[in-house]
Length: 421
Image 1 (cartoon, rainbow, N blue to C red):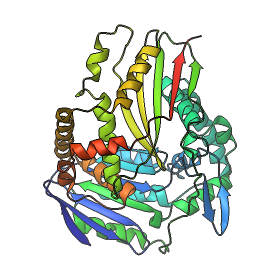
Image 2: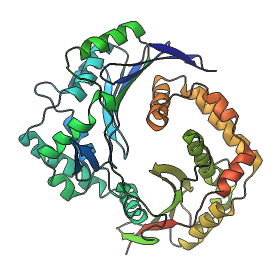
Image 3: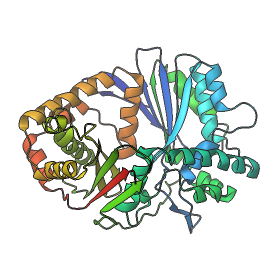
Image 4: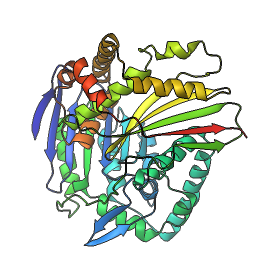
């Protein structure tokens, strides 16, 4: 087992890869609280892959459906065991991953076994899969009444032509209702292998006891290491499918989502730096530190601040800007477009945002969940832990940022509006 320290934060991280391919990351911290997460490299954007020499294509929503099924066991459910042990637990499926986690101060090894049982002891029957279709269909129908969900999904469908990021992580109602036991099983067999997972644990743990427990657990399974699954993506053009769209709902105001589809400029060889600088670009345009909120503050038509965030979809960054207005949407759309395309930045604001990032680095390191999240993010996105994140942020440079920003093509965008007829 290798031990290294995250510099400036004095956090030790112990790493080991088991013979079955499972990567383990342990970070003991001087707190009673403990959190653990099993991350599976399988999410809603993976719909085609190789299996036993053949190309398999599955419906949208299968990763999320599988997440639900992993909590169903004969007898007592994993969630009930966690609750009995005073722990909170949940799972989530994103476009790129599925994660199962718990947090609690006591019964750590019992909870850890429950987590491992949850992902390694599937229980699929035609009956329980049919039952789950009803549950997930209700979840989907509920999301179809939520404006943030509606507008995001419509925008994604308008942004992407070929990429599976155009689909909802939940899938459509047809996808859900037509899901088969065979599709669930082939996805589980392909992706829920230790070689395609990693386990992250942070908090008040005994490292030697924890690693021994994990190794002893896997002695009960005859699992050999194997190559990671081969997934198949689709080549995606830079242009959006549709530049403008309107959704009619019974709403008193107008909800606006502007999505900029930006080809990753690969300005840096280090992919993490590309991600950090695109985040800086969004913050430098619309965060509270900038002048933009002052521009919109006295406009009575604008009912909310412009909130901005980005997500990554294969070779593309999507920067989303959201705002709510009473009536006229054109003025704020023009303002947002002018702001983001002007590429006029203040070095003072850049340094302020840089300080915020450095401060958040320290604050998040004082919470077991924050440290777990940082490790998971690094491993999942970049395949390695940044052991000197303070230096990474400290070296962010304003002139470099301006050069990066000038490489961004902001001409491909979609505007989606939710409003009343």
